[in-house]
Image (cartoon, rainbow, N blue to C red; front, top):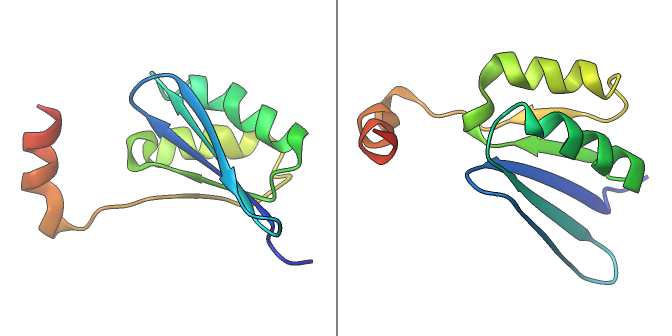
Amino acid sequence: MALSYFGFIVTGDRFEQMQGTEHFKMKVVGVRKPEEGIKAAQQMVDEGVQLIELCGGFGPVWTAKIIDAIDKQVPVGSVGYGPESIEQMYHLFK
């Protein structure tokens, strides 16, 4: 089975956006707090999303909580930043 429905959850503000083509669609959901990502991920799984990626704002703890909350029904990954980005990230979120 090929990947045809991808989900991405980002922390920042609440929103929902869907984009795609005839063969591939992507749902992006914004949440204000990492704990809101649990409900968003559960809804994505219910809608048939095959893979979920989380923005770096979730970190490893919330990524693990979301994986557990969806009972590992689909793969969940998270964005990470290397040491070369630490100073820029600090200034962005201070």
